[in-house]
Length: 190
Ligand SMILES: [Zn+2]
Image 1 (cartoon, helix red, strand yellow):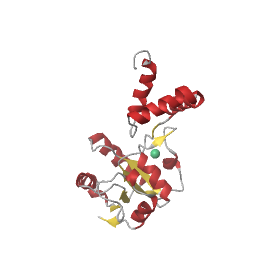
Image 2 (tube, helix red, strand yellow):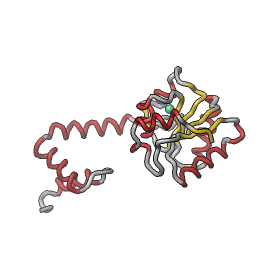
Image 3 (tube, rainbow, N blue to C red):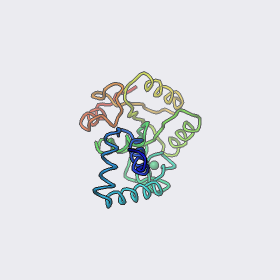
Image 4 (cartoon, rainbow, N blue to C red):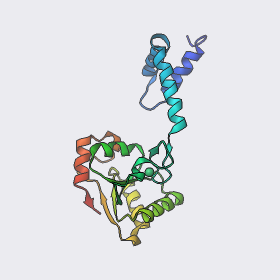
């Protein structure tokens, strides 16, 4: 079957390499685009190319941005002294949707010295004196939080983490908005 349809199976493989897409879905999507809806296929290809060309990380906070500095970092109405630490830029979408936070964000994926230096400059530059860790509870994440707290311990910063309603070991993107809103409202001091 694959012989003579190599280009079709290349497309199936491309879909299958995406998160949450299994073989069956990959075949279904590839078939739909090739046989039923080539217009959508071209549109998707164009959107992907456009997004890859124009979206980058904000040089200050590490979130997604179409410019060197993101909208949140540039927004004067946000509380600069308040910072929310997330482990992935995509967590920012869900926190923004909950409308429970109006400070700045900082994305930290690894605890390498470069990231810690960026974090220290960000804190100093914005006069941050309160940090909310929007990180789901798990043993390794608790160690992650402790490590960062230790690096900032001489700066007189108040540390909180999101509380109730966020299940242990679950990625933030899988937490529903209501639970997350409650978790931010009932943040706990650490
Ligand atoms: Zn930013």
